[in-house]
Length: 356
Image (cartoon, rainbow, N blue to C red; front, side, top):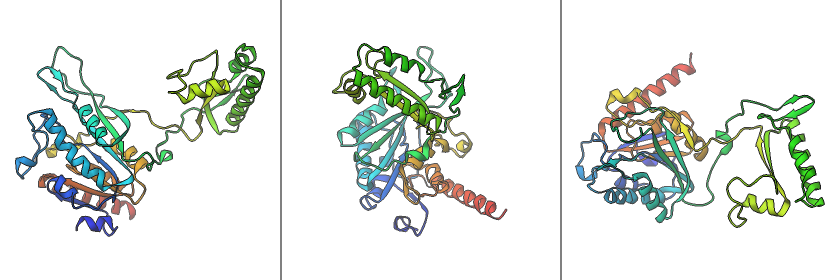
């Protein structure tokens, strides 16, 4: 089996042993939908490998050397990634000589200098962690950066929406939103406004009535209204910075709605790290839950997910579970063997389930 068989659809996955930069150079331009990976962290762990130490990433003496190595790899990733593709990068930080080194942001800023577009910085709250130092707070999070190579990219937002737990309901003869908003106070604020013109009041009242109608019809579950002279914009009142501020200036109001089909996840993910496979000597296993949204949102079904530091294969196996294809690259033959075993076990379970 080779990479071309996966790219052509003849096979659904492959694990390749070797140095990722050299292997990436053999992958055709713009052939990968999504890349998800977590490179070895700088000066943090020793990773099992049978190849020459010159290929190992993370043992560099200086942070800038580590960043430079990663940038060379990420430039190749940019080449193989489709124009509408996404790159999800997980990195942890490091204390060195009592100082937090800011490694994730050193890498992210260097990538932006190379033309990558940073769409999100997700904080992965691991909800647990050790504490050895007595003079600083306990660290329990890592970064997951979402990068793209063009402003228009594949993003299936409906695939990852969170369904609202509460729905609008009637209360004292009024329709009330999922968080208790009826619109009553907004009607009063509009009518009593000395800032809005008569035309602006008429437009605002009409818009508010339409929102309440949509809520009654089950199209939305919640809303908030901002009225000039009463509420302020959330982020900035500068019209050259904030589109909402501009809308407030022109119309006198704006309305934020939460659709009945749910809302997108926030940029803080509370996910406990994977423990199961640590008995197999891999110390940085991706939890499957961390991979679900990136794959669902940025890789179409049947598309290809690549992990150039694949370890025991969590990215590839999650891709297969979600109906995508997977390519994993790792220096360690031991990790690739474990990854193959995990794939085999998954396929056996799936086959058993089909006939049970």
